[in-house]
Length: 253
Ligand code: MF3
Ligand code: CO
Ligand code: CO
Image (cartoon, rainbow, N blue to C red; front, side, top):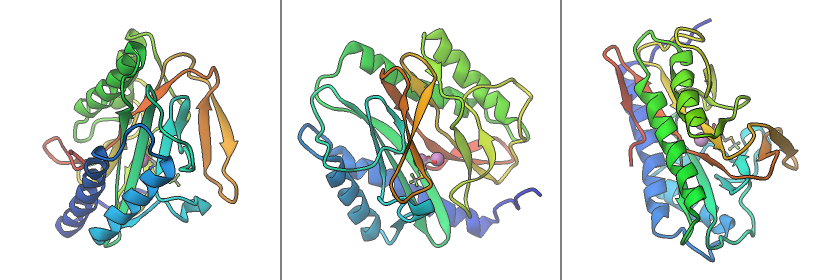
């Protein structure tokens, strides 16, 4: 069964949720530096979302115990905020999902802590480009494979690998819904991109192998993942509204 397209009212609500999620990342910009803990990032993000009348969609989601995901260096995604201290040279993805008025806004980006290596910087830039190339492949009634194809093409040309098991998703009235939006694929294959549905594009780009190792989060069905080779991973995420004429990125900063 397909998902009902969003009404004009629902699109307005989605726009508000996405604006708050993007503004949360902007708010964090001035705080994220050497010496901060990922727990402090989590608290700052929660306070900010509350100040805007939204709540975090993460806490309690399948038992997930924190407000955000904070994934440092070799952590691919769903890193758990804790007492880890940001160090010079680290790269970290902060992933924020807000919930307001029944709608979800999902976005993430990388922060580079102090001076980072040229290798780390190149990986981060590639992850951002991969997301943006993926987004540019969106057309009304196009395919999820169109997005994945462009992401994987860019990532492999740069000598990196795209994570296959985890990817983007439908989002809107639910945090995660159909379709799965892969970071690899074939043009014209996969699921249709339906006008007035929202999806995320969120490629995870690994420096080395695309193999990942799954770890349990205590008391939760959500897993976190590391690269199997311990090399770096980077990710950027936007929520996008597919329209009848193209698309609109709802989580621009
Ligand atoms: N925000 C993540 C995504 O992009 C999902 C996090 S689920 C959580 O889909 F429970 F770990 F928060
Ligand atoms: Co997402
Ligand atoms: Co996210």
